[in-house]
Length: 378
Image 1 (tube, rainbow, N blue to C red):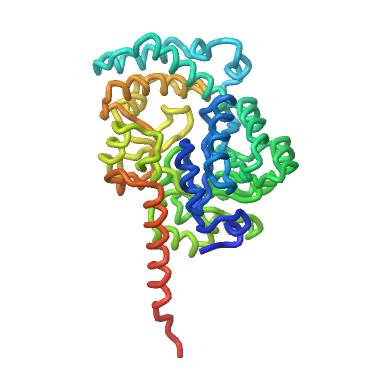
Image 2 (cartoon, rainbow, N blue to C red):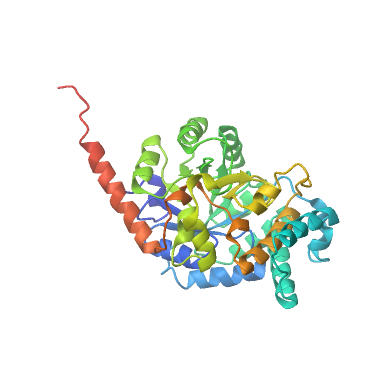
C-alpha cells in the first residue's frame, strides 16, 4: 500500500492524520500512518510541551507539524503581540454583538478565574496565527529532530521559511484549494502539495476533491507529489484518491470522534448528531472561510445586522472566547467547531486503531474488487 512519497517518509500506509491532539498524532504514527500536529493555536511554550510528549510516544517514528502563515492578517495585532491584551483590539461593536447573542440565549458568563485563563490561552494561541507568530512556533519545531515534515496551511511558505526548513532537511508541504495555488507553492519550493477539496473541515475553498486533485496533479506536471484531502474516512475513498494520481490521503475530521480526541463528551456528541449538510462554510470562526458545524452562533454572523469579519487573529479570539461559554453550558444548538462533510458518517466513539484498521481493510477489499473488473479484449 505504499506510494513513492509515503515510502520516502517511512510510512506503512498512505494515511496522513491532521489533528490538534497529541494522542491522535502518536496513535496514527505508531499505526504506520503519518501524524501532523496542527500547531496554529499553541503558544511556543505549549508547543514545546506537546512535541516533547509526542517524541516520547511515537517509538522513534517521524511525524509532522502544521502551521498557519496568513497572507492577510491584522498587522496592528501582530505588532502588539506580547505587549497588550489582544482582546482589547477587538471593536466594542463586535464584542457587543456576540454578548447579545449569548445573553438572549441564556448562556451564562464564565467564572472570572476561568474566563481570565481561557482568554489568555486563546489570545496567546491566536497570536501564533500571524507571520511572526508562526515563525516563533517554527523555532520550537526545529529543536525536535523527529519532526520531519512542516506543512503551511494557508498559502505558500515565505522564502526565508523555506530556506530555514530546507537547511534542517525538513520536508515542506502546503495546502491548496485551487490549481493556481499549487503552481505558486511549487515555485516557492515545497516538496509536496495537499490538494484540499471543499469537503474538508477547517479552512477550505469551493472546488470538490474529485475535481481538484487531478487539476493540481496536471498543474505541477507530476514534479511534486500530491496528497488528496477533503472527504476521506473510508478505504474505498483512499482507493479513489490513488486512482486519481494522489500519493496518499490527508484526514482530519474522522479523528475527532475517537477515544484519543481532545474533544469532551459533549463536543463529540455534537459531531455524532450532525448530518453531512450540517458542515457549512462560514467566516465567523477565524475571519477566513472555515467549514464547520452549523449552529445558531454561526448563522447569526450571516444575518444582515452582523458586523464585518475581523482579520486574523482577532476574529478567532472573539469567536473562541464565546465558544468556551457555549461548551461549558453544553448548548449543542450554539456549538460550532471545524468539521468536514464526512461528519455525517460519524455516529459513535471509536479509536484511532480501529479507524486505521477499517480504512486499510476496505482499501484492500476495494483494490481486490477493482482487479476483477473485465477490461475486455482477448
